[in-house]
Length: 254
Ligand code: NAD
Image 1 (cartoon, rainbow, N blue to C red):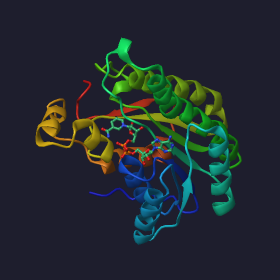
Image 2 (image 1 turned 135 degrees about the vertical axis):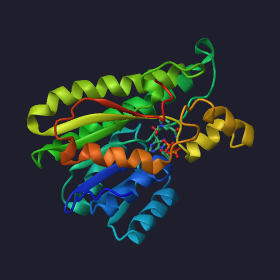
Image 3 (image 1 turned 90 degrees about the vertical axis):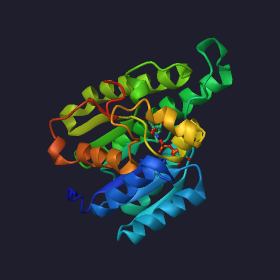
């Protein structure tokens, strides 16, 4: 099945674009004729996504950036503007997985790492993207939370705190900019088959079965099943959808 979005002339900035959900979303944006800034902290991975975008007939550039460093984020947004002249959409999706320790055993460094990448990184991105998007009289931002942004999970205190935080940050920003035509929304993926999920499950038969057991639908989601919702949230079909957290999780948190 395919839905044909048309983002001709528009520019999308995608963090965590070098792998998994971000990579798939970059390719889907390209198929919809948007130009794409593929942003992430692994240059070779960003470059591979650019090649996939080009193979799909799209235009993209790779931008190396650690989203937890504000100066790097500011430079990354500037590089996207220099390359494409405008910014219409942002998918703030870079993130790291939980480490599995009970709350009282979470090392303070690990707490800070989770919050600085998964939450503060989203804030830095929005802070520097919003003035550019407003120059186009609006656009759309989609931030990646998680099922762990709407429900607690054991061994994931810092991750849950960061992902619940993404929803609060996004809802407040959505109200700040709704009247100016900039829509901010959130996507909350369930268990999606990506390199992150491979690391989290251990990638073994047993580990995969254990995570799939959390999914009423009986399988993992595919990255393109998240990408489709992100594109819809950026499209005019979602013009009245503001500040919402869309859970796409095969029923995991129902
Ligand atoms: P992934 O590991 O395949 O991709 C994450 C990307 O983010 C990688 O390219 C990585 O290099 C990049 N990244 C990590 N830290 C960064 C930093 N500091 N600066 C810039 N880039 C950085 O993972 P994924 O599964 O595609 O996850 C994407 C997002 O979806 C994450 O925010 C994750 O928390 C969220 N999520 C994933 C799942 C899942 O089941 N896969 C479920 C819920 C939420």
